[in-house]
Amino acid sequence: MAKSQSFGDKVRKRRQERQVMAKLIIAEKKPNGSFRFREKMVPQQNVQAELKAATR
Image (cartoon, rainbow, N blue to C red; front, side):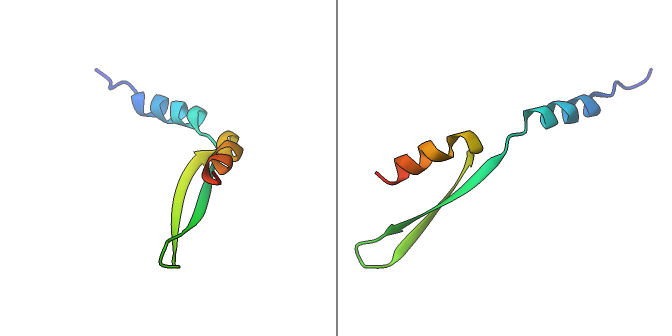
């Protein structure tokens, strides 16, 4: 009995689910004067909303 080819189906499904992502790097100044950097991966559609949330 032949093995079903589920691997090809999984790959096709993943390709359809792919989204364009953006990497946001946000700098925060600490009380001692140094900076801390936060990195976050977000979908391209949510970039503006994330930037507004980060600046508050």
